[in-house]
Length: 250
Image 1 (cartoon, rainbow, N blue to C red):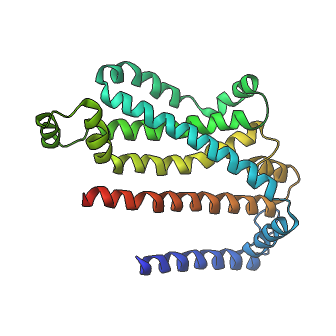
Image 2 (cartoon, helix red, strand yellow):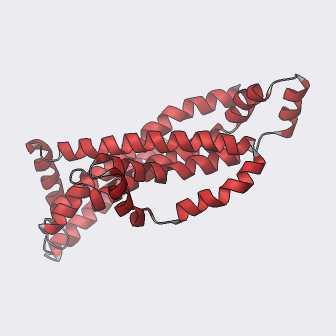
Image 3 (cartoon, rainbow, N blue to C red):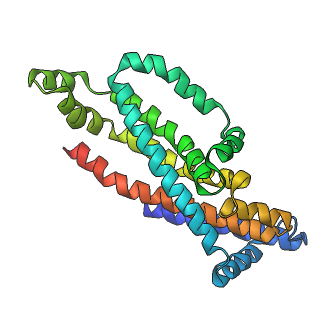
C-alpha cells in the first residue's frame, strides 16, 4: 500500500509538471488556463490575507450540517424500510423520484421556503447525502446470512436484538460505503447550492471570481474544495475501517 501511495504522489507531480510546462511553452494567458505555480500563489495569498477563511468556514458548516442531517435520515429510514418490506415496496418509488428531480431546479424553492443564507444550502446538501445511505442501508439489511438469522430465531432473540446485533453489524460494509459516497456528494451539494443562493462560501466565491475574470482564484478555490473533500473522505475511511475489521474478526 505504501508503494501505491508513492506512485499516486508521483503521478500527481508529473501531471502538475506537465501542466506547468504546457502553459509556459504555449504562453497561455492566465485568464484562460493559469499555471499551477500561479494558482498556488493565488491560494497562498488568499490564505495569508485571511480572504479565504470565512468562505471555507461557511462551506464547512454547510457540509457538516447537511451531511449529519442527510446521513442520519438516510440510515434511519433505510433501517425501517429494510425491516418493513411492504412499506419499502410502497415508498421506494417516491423516494427514487425525489432523487431524480435535479436539486439545482429545487434551489429557488428552497430559497423561498427557507430564505437566503445557510439553511437552503444545508437542506440541498442533506437531500443529496440522503439517498446513498438509504439505498445502501436498505440493501445491506436484506443480505444477512440465512443461517445466522435461523440461529437468532432458535435463540429466541427479539426483533430488536436481531436488528442491532446481527443485521446492522453484518451490513456495516455497505452502510459505510454509502457514508463515504455521501461525504463526497456533500461537497457537491454545498458548492452547487452556493452557486444559486449563497452570499458566502467557496461556491459563491467561484461565482465572484468568474464575474471578475480572476481565473487563478477560481482554480485556487477548486483546489481548496478538492483537498477538503479528499480530507473528509480519508477521515471517514480511517474512522470506519477499524470497526469493519472488528466486526469481521468477531
